Length: 395
Image (cartoon, rainbow, N blue to C red):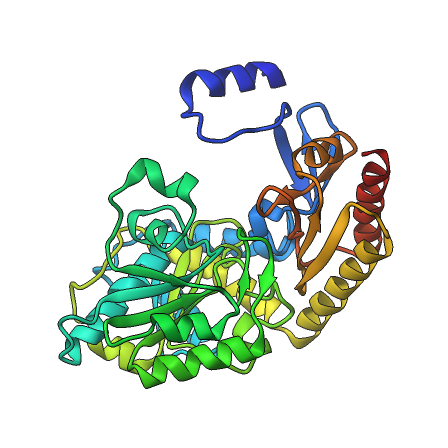
């Protein structure tokens, strides 16, 4: 089928909740995607921070073949299987966690974390301790609970009433957190590096303060690392770059190289509050996906791999700053999670970049977001920034 035929077919039969450019992607290799006309695109979006190992990776391909060779694409959580247990072991051994529960997406991992926090409070005899404290510019997903913790009127208004019991403080402002904390708060949820909200890293003082306030009020501290986790910031888990441990951590996007998976990592005290039947998912933790995820996490956890992510992220930030464009107000981020705040809206720039073979996305109306595959080369980073620089000179 020709590209326009595919686009027309999609418009006729697929719910139109996305705005897509006028080309059809067909295949990928490394950090490059190719459309149906053979045009190449350097991908600095990576499926929104999902394709950490790029496209057509030999190791991922082998892991998928190994998983498929068992004939078990799915087996119910009613039965034991090896792959999810081995992945859970790896996640615990590389983090603060004692136990893991698998989900399918980042949004439902966050909703599961909210349930676990409320259950923990209830188990400790706090019947009225159920509120969640979240932050300005946060993004935790678009399900009813995760959306309630995502303070975006555009996203929330059409679907109210949402889950009750969510309050908000200002990100990176401990005084605003203290003003909101009381004995009704069962959990604080925060992204160590905010993604959709504009690529804002938390300060170390802020996360340390949240840890202290959570302990003071017997509340759980939840780190949403759906976007910033699994190597994206140059540490396997973003919290490790701050030296502040949560009670619960949610992960998803890059865990299985594009296969659907999420995970809720937790301390033993949280696990002890949960009982059989309290939470479940038909497809979560399946043997195929968890086998692939174990390969991905093992690769990214290598110290040399993580050091390279940190070094390449610094190169990307340096090159963006060296553009010296009057349109660039600030460059910020950690590792290969970088935002360039502009004095103009990013939409036209993103369109022009695609025309020149570069895929980038935004993080809010005026922040250009770079979340490329973690395997991106120095030359590819230089090429991406050069394209952005050329476009900025024309605007």
